[in-house]
Amino acid sequence: MTADALDPVIHAPARLRIVATLAALADGDSLSFTRLQNMLELTPGNLITHLRKLEDAGYLIAETTGNGRASRTSIALTRQGRAALASYADALRALLGSA
Amino acid sequence: MQGTRDDDTATTDEYGDELDPREAARLLAQTERNARRQFDLSPQWINGLMGAVILAAYGSLWLSTRGQHPYKGPSLGVVALVYVAVAVAFAASVKVYRRATAGVSGPAARQRQVEGVAILVSFVLGSPVLQGALRHYGAGDAIVYGVIPAAAPLIIVGTTALGIAASKADRPLFGAALAVVIAGVVAAFVGPSGAWLAAGIGLFIAVVGYAAAGTRLDRPVPRRA
Picture 1 (tube, rainbow over the protein chains, first blue to last red):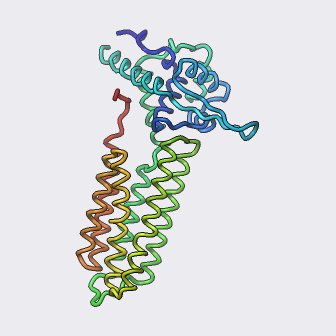
Picture 2 (cartoon, helix red, strand yellow; picture 1 turned 90 degrees about the vertical axis):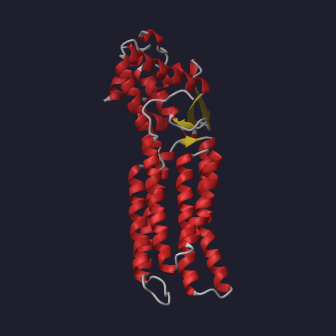
Picture 3 (cartoon, chains in turn green, red; picture 1 turned 45 degrees about the vertical axis):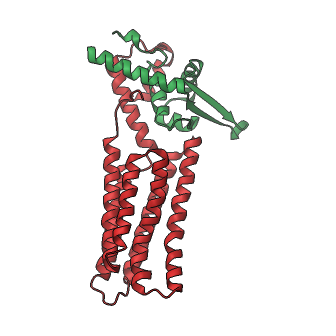
């Protein structure tokens, strides 16, 4: 098995950390953009870029409520995203086990 | 710092080609550990604090009432110490809860809030109502101010927690709640002074056991269900 078997959407430092952090929440729960940004110590622009890639892949869903300054964006991992992380972890284990 | 590194890799490392699998495994394990710690509602330090508060409070109550014939209850100084200890533990728990749940929303978060209210209501109402009723019907001090306040909260709150744990198939919580209920039952039959000792030992075992189970289940990498 080679590193090509690893999901390229997740196999990037920032996105791996985003997915792993959201996976620590209970199924169906979401995290505010601000808390996620603070936990990962990423800039807003950087975080948005990576969230968009993950959202395009169907791994997470972002919902914004309210308007203007009162708006709040919540991010949650989808079932597809949770399954993708589990597959990624399995692939990593297999890769490292065969190394 | 990882945050700085991610800034640098945001555009150049679009598909993560440069991330070594070994480094990825380390990063995954570290992130999971950090996230679990940040979302944890019962971190080790709060379990340690609870254990210390239980030993101090119930130990003081037992020492204060040991050998009383007839039973007169703990001294005012000990009662004040217990209230202070409980207040400190409650304030620390609230702080941990707020920190862990900041920015978290959804069905599981709402369920946790409802469970918290159920535990609080059973704790606040359970024992005082029984004490009031027993006093009303002429029960003695040994029952009203000894056995009931030591045993009843454990049985009532423990049973509530048992139901919550069963509904979530949470084995560590179920085990801890069961230990609390058993301690309450034992406390109900060992006399007014011994009740404080039995309750304290049972609660301490429950807290330590729950903390140990949480540590044992702390896995580094997620596995398929």
